[in-house]
Length: 330
Ligand code: BMA
Image (cartoon, rainbow, N blue to C red; front, side, top):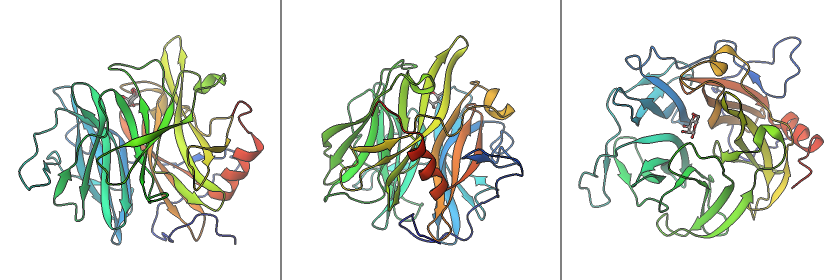
């Protein structure tokens, strides 16, 4: 079998074969949702990030509290399906060890390991939404760094290694509300504090499912064919926005260059838990677990702003699919 994903094997990742008769390129776990509203005192837990940690899994979860604000919680799991999520909100400290000012809200976290340090990026309140960044080595002490940008920005997603000596952060400039526009950019930093060398990665196009806005999703996956970037694409319907998932390949050395973007969505709200919830018709991918040895990818995504769900795909089939259905406007 060819090795397309550049990385480690992950034999304990969740996996389920495509069901008989299913021809979808990405297929759902048949026991979705994996994190329901029964897990954290009835709060909605969705748009969350998970990662392998030691022989288990760890996650940063978004929970929407009864005061209306979302915040970030730590979760642990042996199988990435059954989760225990801590009731207390993650407490950050400053680099000098003093307690950081509690964040007013934090949502849509992403989580990545780079050179032995774990970084959380999330949508952080800073007189409006921007990208917050924190780091930890042990998931006990969390050090909050400077926000990456002035407001407004969302969907901050780090690459899992430095590229040409810099950390690279995908992001999506936005507004203060339910932004009716949005393209994916990237920024670079030598030290996780000063961000610059901003580049446009991908704009909305005429394809109806992604003609309003785009946002990077999980941490990009390094493959022999380029960085596999799974993202969300949004269209406007008479009953509101609809969030689907898309996929593209970016150049390994210059990820602002799109090699090929798929014209089709790879998953769109169709299951009842995606179509109906606090916000209907949302599939919002924030993480993947993947096995380089078997070429398997599990996508962890928020469903209808209410629960967390899982979907699966096989890397070579997905890459072939992207190439067979190119976005002709890139
Ligand atoms: C976006 C973000 C996401 C959310 C989505 C759909 O603007 O707030 O957290 O899932 O809207 O409501």
